[in-house]
Image (cartoon, rainbow, N blue to C red; front, side):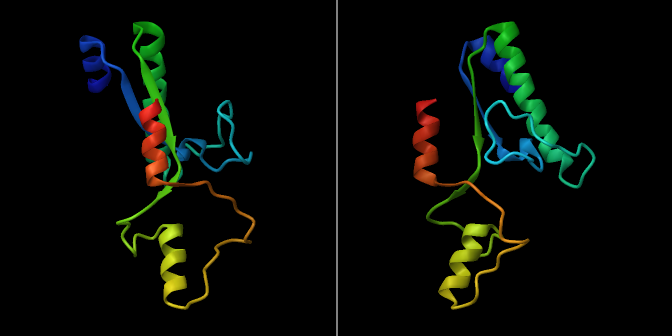
Length: 129
């Protein structure tokens, strides 16, 4: 709210770095921009998911009511140089297991899907916003 108020006062455009987590445990793959998600509001990650959902809601409310220019980037799995090799993310796990000659771990039944983006592609996309 503080940043939205500041952006309104100085007539700045505001960029919110959001997340795919706003979709919760989606029942639709891939998710379109008009998909509202399947969220557990009291689950173990609810604070993060709901916090991002509220942040998006507030941005769009300021856009509608105050005329503020807002941009929301829903950032999915990003990878690139200088990733910590043991950060627990799927890309670094795959890379480390491959480099160590280990079997690649796939959790679940192997039918899951993920969207990945290279960090320079993320930066280029956000810059165009």
